[in-house]
Length: 363
Image (cartoon, rainbow, N blue to C red; front, side, top):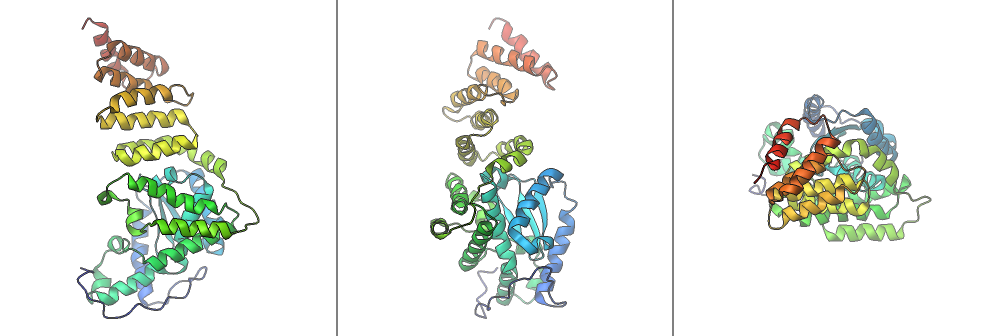
């Protein structure tokens, strides 16, 4: 609809920055947009997909407040259980962070940059600006009839993205984070994006178009910065994420975007934390995809997982099932037996015992 409507007005001049605790004038176009976002927020508050973990929520909000400064009190954080990479700030200060993001940023500094980027959109009122520009080009009843969810996917302009990058960078540096981590955050996102089809791009990349020149620009900003302190906050980030990571990795594998999950898991393995857990899930990617030499790769992944103390018992179960598919009856029996020894109260014990019993019979 929007592409069919010829613009009747030129770009509006930028709006003044949103001040801390500021609300739009009653009856204004901006107030109408806030009303829609407030209705959406009231629904989000009762969503079953919100992560109910006070400790992790407090950690994320703490990072947000370090970069947001006096605007922190105007922002509400909602951590949504969705394995895609996404963060989005609504005009009224409703910030959604999807759980897939937390697997894809490597440290607190990268998280601070992404949150700062969203604060930049909020502070500069970019969504309000886009809303007004689109309304000016569309039908008269556009503002009344377009659902908030549809309005929220309107892509920002290239200039607005640059502004948000600049503000996010400045905020993270002012908060004491390593300036180089801004470009590294985008680079990680782009590496995974290249592994998946354009048609299945993430929501974040659809609304935050990424370009290599943005990574280069952030690199130039980092080279010119001279912060008083420069930390990545990696240990604090890993400590906060670790209790949730197994659940998030399960969600990641279940979305069956195997190419991008493969890139993500290999990057996490390079980072070097929790290798038993990570190799297990890489094995799950290969087992579930099952193409070409995926099953032998899965065997290798599970064996690597089992070299580490944090490997979940399920690595033995999956190893046994892959051996079974490959026709290795002795290997399957050994792995499944060890699985029950490691996890005597396994919910699938009866099924696994049946497999073992069948494997002990002559073929």
